[in-house]
Amino acid sequence: MVVRMRRNRSETAKRRSHHALEGVHTVKCECGAARLPHRACPSCGKYNGRIVIDIVARAKRQARRDTRREKALRESGQITEDKEKETAQS
Ligand SMILES: [Zn+2]
Image (cartoon, rainbow, N blue to C red; front, side, top):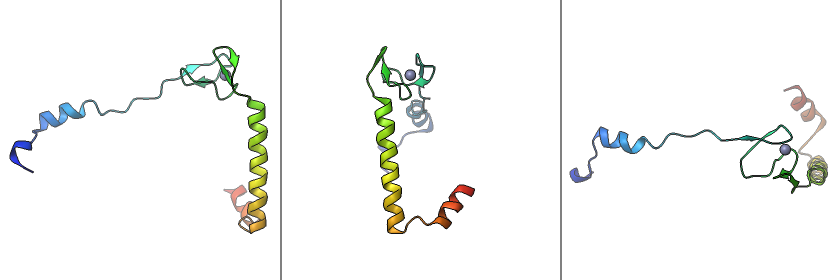
């Protein structure tokens, strides 16, 4: 490093004084769950009092995907019944 680029401890500390991480800010939804401000609630799907996400349809879709995925893994032999027991125990 060239001498003119050298920063002393004080200058380094001043720069790093803005590097601290901040916690996630949450607000309480009308359903009681914590959600991010200015975002739709992931548990009830409401934003500003109206429903913007169809939670039921999303859950159905996810369940269908999970069963299809599990079936595919079973057919390809990546999930055997022994493995299922192991994962259930742990
Ligand atoms: Zn909610």
